Length: 286
Image (cartoon, rainbow, N blue to C red; front, side):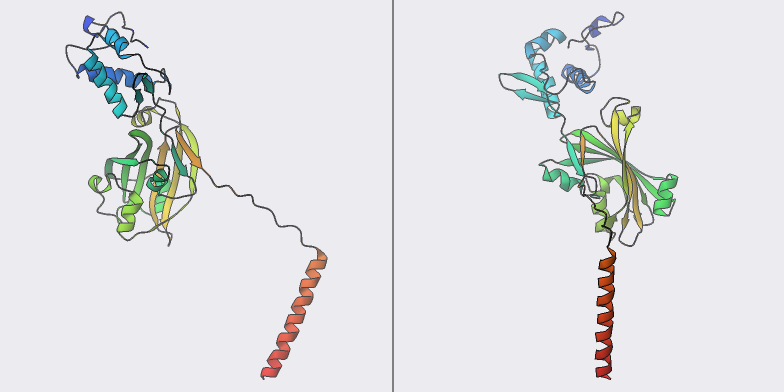
């Protein structure tokens, strides 16, 4: 797993580090190992080199190596085990119910996990045509957010919301908040709507946001959420990292069997009998 220098690199970069300028050495080592974990040379469960091996590889003190490993541990990328070294941690798995609109924080909490939301931007923007049809307006906010699970980015969300309904939306208001929860607080109660899921390949922008590789398969959830009266509250695209599991509660539906002619005849006989009895009751009332 050692870093191989290229032939034209200056001496100070021969072991992958820039000692003349740039971030502290421990941050550079952390980032080098981080890239190797993201690029998949180091799979979950793989052991990292020992502290002594990293010292020799990078030509630094043990305290610098320990700072680098501590940074990876804080990011949830490795597990440090006393007497056994460090191993690459398995990426946390996000589980969500496809038929449930919203409530992603509650779904994660049910599995003992905690989601965090970072708002990238809230800006006035013209929505795509499907969003115009769903929201019945071109006056919308475009909201971009990243959801983190145990410090790992698991979903990038791009949402369009009617500005006429929510003129007060800001980055500060939505940071680390549930969008549907904020809507409820302001008098609009999401009821749900149609959704669809498809596999797509990550482009460079999505790969950067989700810390994945370009062309890596992602799960795209697209849909609209309306209130009980049918008013469109949001139209969204959510790209999920590969470590997402969608739970679906599938039901077997049986087609009704063919009704026999005898059964139809009996029902008609009962109908005539009921009509006759009702007619006698009516005559008695008169």
